[in-house]
Length: 79
Length: 162
Image (tube, rainbow over all chains, first blue to last red; front, side, top):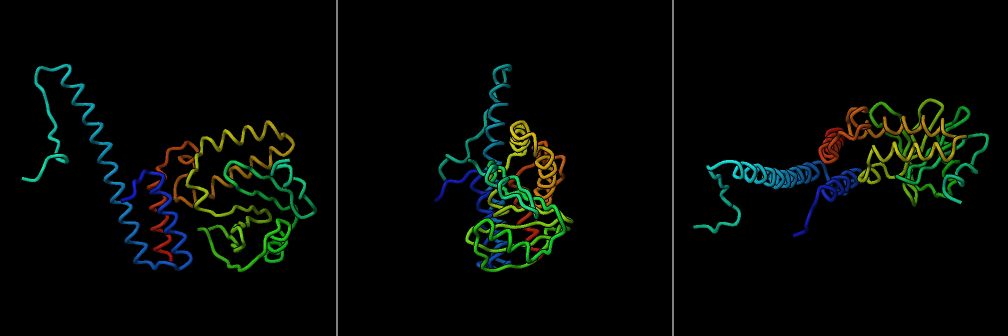
């Protein structure tokens, strides 16, 4: 597993452009790689959205008697 | 001596040049009509680059000429003017339009004699980069584009235009 961030994903896309240009990969492979990169980007967006939501929930809980909790689905074991 | 000085010293009857270190873009502006292929080889020689292979292609509406050398670079012809930028793409990974504009202003203050060239080349480059990323020039100038999304768009554009 290689850790990624937005910049490394952009570098990956540029890499694919170069490979496509030099015929190292074909169109189908390039499409597949682009779709993979999109999926990774979606996962990163999800992380950001989660952080954002947690902040909003914390703010809400501070000002209200009703306490809202977000179920931590990722760390919960399979039953 | 920096690149800028070196490049300005390259000035001859054919072109005068400006080099901005920030994104490793070479900027050259011709003073007279040019014969494309001859001129490409001439420039490559003056930069000490051995031309291995060359081919024509378009970046959307802009005619450009790519030559593969030890250091790949690209020459874009716009009427009688042309500019060179190498490795289009990878150089743009760290592209920051706001910083680019700041660097232009610093450059203009430091080299007022060629500030008009730098200014016009900045505008052309911003247009080229906007073309590359398939986005609006004004949005790009204001740094309001998402480089990841635009890079994906560009890759898809390259795929669909094979």
